[in-house]
Image (cartoon, rainbow, N blue to C red; front, side):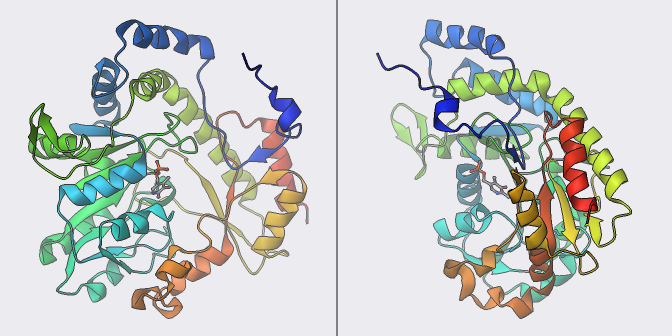
Length: 381
Ligand SMILES: *Cc1c(COP(=O)(O)O)cnc(C)c1O
């Protein structure tokens, strides 16, 4: 039998580094009974008991009516577009993780980039109409950093032009607006439960939809199009979440409120202590009434003595790995650069933000000492 090589032997430095995030994990012993149950039942996937329980528990926790679990957020995005049979052109933001635009291209859809709002860094509703053409079928906004988009304004445009709205809500687990869960807006919303997100199942994702019929279509699509043993109704894919991930998610739900509370505390300390640092601006709250503090983005302005990249490097030199989310913009990657909507003069706000943005470490296990150290690096200049 192969011995497990101790982590320290492979990466002795790993304990000392501070990354932008660190996954929140429950005590291992709490997970063992779930594994025992899977070993006893020998049901590993295909919508087993943990999958069913986790879907129900998530609906309840998030305050949504219909939710379908997925292997990851990207497959959820791909399947969401198939669910609504989206074609032609889709309006989206360049200020996101690449999976947003990739999901369009994988479906043979042309992404049309529209600039962002300088305050919230979300898709700017006032710029959407000018980008609509006869080929436009949908809008795909992102609740960037878990800050709620202007959902009312976006819905109004969608209604006027008969467009679908699919929210990439990968950052927006647990976020609420005045009307309840932000995930209830638009036709569909997708979540990611990737290790780096606020709520993780190692890998995982979900689509939130508004009615039972759509939920059924999604369930068929994520299982090759099978309805029963002999009936295939659509050209589906394999997007099913396994029983291990679903069981883990059920356990994670028991700890999420504690994790979110710790994040809220860190967010408040950062805001308080960075408020008077000249040239540093914390990104403002947007339309959310309940936030998840998924990220802590700051804008390093021209009044700050160091450039954004110099500050990023200063952190790296001290083994602190902040992230420039989102630099480069999706529209700057070679595969998207030649699109007319990707021209920098079409996206001035997004370009400016991507030059100034820096996401600071925020995760439940971040100690007050680490926080002091991080804030000290920014303010001691
Ligand atoms: C993480 C992320 C995704 C992809 O989710 P995965 O679960 O990693 O596939 C999509 N969009 C955004 C905005 C993300 O941050």
